[in-house]
Length: 93
Image 1 (cartoon, rainbow, N blue to C red):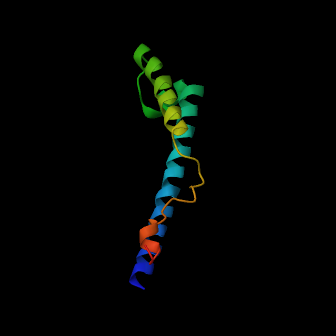
Image 2: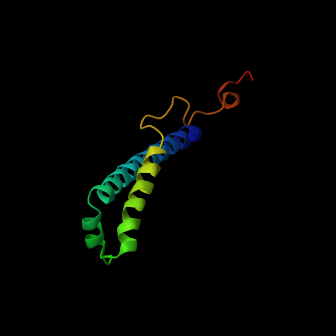
Image 3: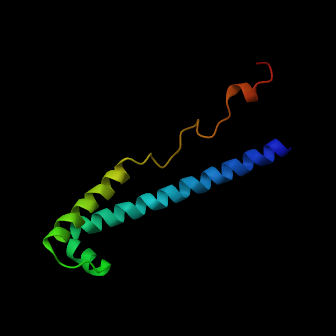
């Protein structure tokens, strides 16, 4: 019974981590789009002074955010995520 409870706890923790990862992905997407679509507004909200460097860096950081989003795994986990190895499940091995 203890092993079953711990597996349920592990699954709940994995679900929580995946949910937070998706939330961070959406946040990065929104931030990256904002930095590319309205860099002046983003700079003003952040309190960054209007300089040639900041006008160059803010859109570059937006591109970086979008690259991070592109590297995230899809929302649906594979069927094998969190599965125990066969040696633990099959008593005949």
